[in-house]
Length: 261
Length: 335
Image (cartoon, rainbow over all chains, first blue to last red; front, side, top):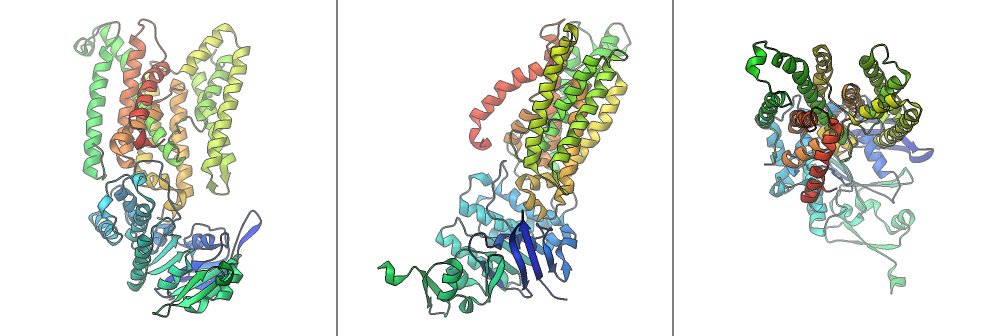
């Protein structure tokens, strides 16, 4: 039995405009995958299809050999968890209550079990969010919120973790610490797929980089193979220079150095 | 004390406190009134204490309990489902539909045969019809759009009110008075069979809503958030709207629209107890019940032997309290 996702000709359109156009991909081992592409390229839509949130797509999207639309939602939620892009709460939930919501697919009754609290404790420890567990979620900074949301997804104890731009509002220290965390989770046997706009972070940490352009897969390989001056120019419309770090990872400097001076 | 982690024991403890307060109010409330009565004489079957207690005051307390509790729970639920702090049981227009039904019954004299039951029946039919229309307009395939639901509800609200005003223009003087009286909301002494039927609808609906507390917690964060955590979102939201509207409809049919209970009780409790529905829902029922029993007791004693409509009392008592809450706790409400 294959683990992970198989996408076969997945398409999606909103009100007649095509957002995803025949995407075929396989994810069959635990690794850290970064997905990049211009705004509106279809990254979030693809992730939402994989999370089972957009069942009206065309083509086939399978998880562990089974069409995601046909999965029992609770069972699927025990295998795949999703970190959405930003989260606005209207009501006074504490940090711990938000993380506890990750345990929903495991409980049948009204209350959490000791095992649930154990998982929550661990998730908050991993994400360094235990320090503000009793604070109102709305009083947190953007970076703290993001760690709490990731903690909630980790508390779900998934085999696969999908993240939609998890580092958007974070300072550099927290951006790096989140990517370290994601790389660490992938080494522990979790398939981690994250959308990012930061090609350098992806290059530094991801095992695999997928570039989406206008709803199609433009590139899918290691960051070293994918990132080139030509690709950055053609997909993002920006001139750049790609260097190599001492570790052999690519490093991009944006802007045409000749005309910048 | 803000309850930060909902465990079975804490839910029981918080509910026990609220239940104790409710029981104390319910025992005291029937004794208050223009005619002074005693439980001893009433239980001994002595007139007029017995008649006043069992046929005038106790039914009112019971009706106020069920109405207040049901409206507060419906308010909690609608605020969660619509993710809107200003949502009330009346946001979807169910109560306006019920009011329109009642007004039609008053104007056409459907009540001439059997006055009150005619009004109740038409109000109930009006409320349920409104629910069907609102849900029908807002459903996109199997999904319900909260945004469309909200706008449809507001539109239906305005339309019903417009038709009510039009009908009131056509109505006779006596009918017009009856209409205004109905629209202000009031607790009337009803027979025990009616209270029994109401309890049979209100209590299971509240039980259903309580049982799904954890799901409302997730839905309050977001639909995708809940779906990604294994909740069957669209089915549950539809069930929630139906349960909340049923509560609102049956209660409004009996009492008319009583404002503020469904808005201030949930918010006041959220400030004290946090947003977790496992604690919020049982406490809202008990405190909502207590609030309306107190308001109704004031309504029938303030200008005794005359009566003030209870909807006026809840707004006059509730309004300033709510404004005070908004001022003093603005930061934790974040409105």
